[in-house]
Image (cartoon, helix red, strand yellow):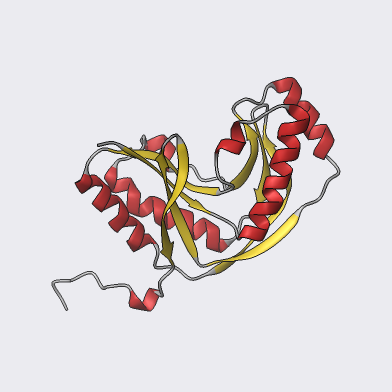
Length: 191
């Protein structure tokens, strides 16, 4: 048994539809298609392979622990890029998303699912084009979008786990945020 999981934020349907319209425009005009193979999402933790039921159980238990966090508003604003290879919608950094990313990493790092260097990276963004994006086309997309504006805001009260099934990322589990006051206390010798 080997499963591939992705921990991510998925915006509301109305925003996903807007993002899909942009991704389809980019694909049609610039002939780049790789991003269409994935759901519109903000990666919170890179895809990880899990090869046993016990490891999968520890993975989901860690994510449950990470879900004790307060809801927050998230803004997607304008366009940006990682030079020469990825074009995306910017995810405006805020305390909520940065804490969520940090909390997920803190809970998953002991499971050693990623190399140490990969497990600390967190630069939230919503990808529009990557992988099959070559440098000349990358420059054309930047030129096309340099004066365009985009802004959407939504409330975040959960995050998702997608599973790679039949060569596609499929929704697998949603983890709804739980109140910090409900978090079980770690037993102590002095209680």
